[in-house]
Amino acid sequence: MDQDFDRIASSWFAQFSLSLRQQDVPGCVSLFHSSGWLRDLLVFTWNLRTLNGHDQILNYLNSNMKLTTISQLKLSSDDVYFQPSPGDLPGSISSGFTFSTPIGIGRGLFTLIPTDPVSGIWKAFTLLMSLDSLNDYEPIGAEQGNYHGNAMCWSEVREQRARVIEANPHVLIVGAGQNGLQVAARFKQMGIPTLLIEKNKRIGDQWRKRYPSLTLHTTKEHHTMLYQPYPETWPRFTPRDKVADWLEQYAVSQDLVVWMQSRPLPTPSYDEQKKEWSVCIDRNGQILTIHPKHIVLATGTLGGAYTPSVEGHSIFNGYTLHSDSYTGGPQFYGKRVVVVGTGNSGADLALDIHVRGAKSVTLLQRSSTCVQSSKTVVEMLDRVWAPDIPTEVADYRAAGTPFNLIKQTLREHKDEYWEKDKELLEGLIKAGLNVDLGPDGSGILPLVSERGGGYWMDVGCADYVISGKIKVKSTSGIRKFTETGLMLEDGTVLEADVVVFATGFVNIRTVMKEIFGDAIDKAGPAGGVDEEGEVKGAYRSTGHPGLWYAPGDFQLSRFGSRFLAIQLQAIELGYMKQGI
Image (cartoon, rainbow, N blue to C red):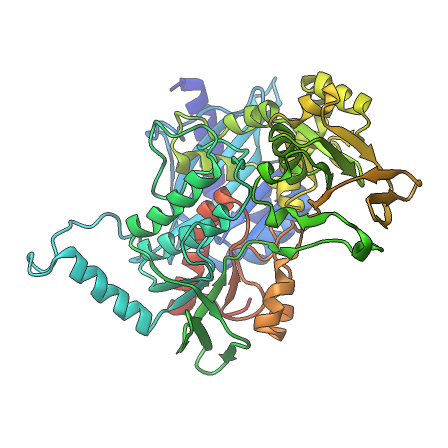
């Protein structure tokens, strides 16, 4: 460890610690750069908040600093991953630290930048503080594996535990995909009895039902599962079926209690006095009623398939389907295929259909598309989720850079990112595709959180478009079907035997409202980001007591599940009020 890094970090941290102990808000704010950032995850409030600039930070701390007491602050000088060292910003210094509050322990991460090279003054450009666990409610960790003096074997222990949870689950999680499973695994470690229900026959079926050529577009380091990293021999980009099988065995490895072929029936009711739900579950035809204190919706942000209504569909002599129903390209051998939509799914399907022998494939673009190469996006992800960095370390480092700052930085470097993919982008433009780097030039990564779609991370389709093997037609819209294809608004007719609509999905709230009724309206939105850059409704209070959302990708649920678990514990202990 460089002594200068340690000296500078220690000097700033000593002033910061003093300001917290004395609850000196102006003094604390003065330690931030004028455009600095504070991210607070359950420390000063029971919420996930991000503040930017002196005014916002001052107002926030004025309202909340005196609500808790921060003590036992210690710089992470002995932690190889969080000791004072060069930060991600040029000329910056970053360090981790730990602290205590009256109810728990926490940790933090700051990045300092010099504001006056002559006098050697350093200010915090980013500061993350998070509550890690509540006192006496730390994660359980690994068991010894000997039960009741070996009087019970594991199968008996597991069956007994499952019966207890099934009879009286504290939490019901709807959806046993990657998010539901990770949240349940976190809850188990935090001692929260949890039952998952999943509508499919097998865990992982939501992946098995997607197109066979699907491979995750992020690296295995980014989409690894909580507590259970992939083997060293695992592919860098995980194929669909391997994801599905991994999720299935993950539920077994993590000892999770899951009811398959199960779904909640309309309409669960919440008892304000008892602070519990009454939920009827259709468990493979058997109707059961349970009374959990909390329900976590882990069904993602995507609801049912959205297919636009197009005049004349009934006269079309060909075949139409949504990408959600696509089962592979061989069935379209020798066919003329139009794929409507130029996001990830549209590009992946067009490529699969072409290489499987379709007579022709045309991508129909309805609006400008954000396109970046897989190589460019992976390079950005690798800076954080590198193969030699533990997942928990990478997740926490990533959390230390607020979403809006990431977006701002990407926007400032948009010309560089265009240059990286210049050949690909100009080739697509020449082929007739309208391309951009997102609405503000910040690229694909922000769109993942903001929209969950509307981008094309290229894994090979672009080469076929540029070569002319896959055609592109950009249009303002579809006017109608004809007997033999599609007529566009400009009068062009695309001859087709098959039309595939890769046109996205309705929001999951539409589907959940059919089950939960008015509770969904009270709960507010799920997904997208708020003005502070935090994901709306995610892993924090939704506005309806006992109802929570667990949306996002592998990384968001892996990281956010900790804070959701702490909030449920805090409610049980009386630290946090329901629905705030």
